[in-house]
Image (cartoon, rainbow, N blue to C red):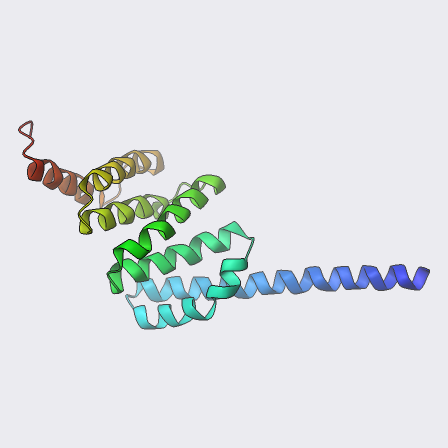
Length: 167
């Protein structure tokens, strides 16, 4: 009986360590993909994202998933110009940031990106909604982002396109 309990304890411990190592490898891969994206190296970033798509999709670690999905959406928006495909991914990214209570520039960027996608597919009402949401998120984060002016510029263009005379 003692042997069975020790064996079971060993299996549980080994399984937990294997799971931790898998998460660490995923985290390293996701961070490497993010580094490639910062350098605008979409090809290498996409190769990494594609290689870890399955494990990250099944991963229950939200902090790994949010960075993975953010990388995936960035590739779809900036490199592939697949705006419709990126919208549900960006919505999940925003949900994960909110669930994790992460208030970073990436959270604001996800709101910006989804607004940009909606703008490019012609859904101006949703674009305006998410641009406004990004302004709120930016003020919560730090309020001094250098890209903040682009949000105001995009909103101005939306209002101008609609014929808003208040501008």
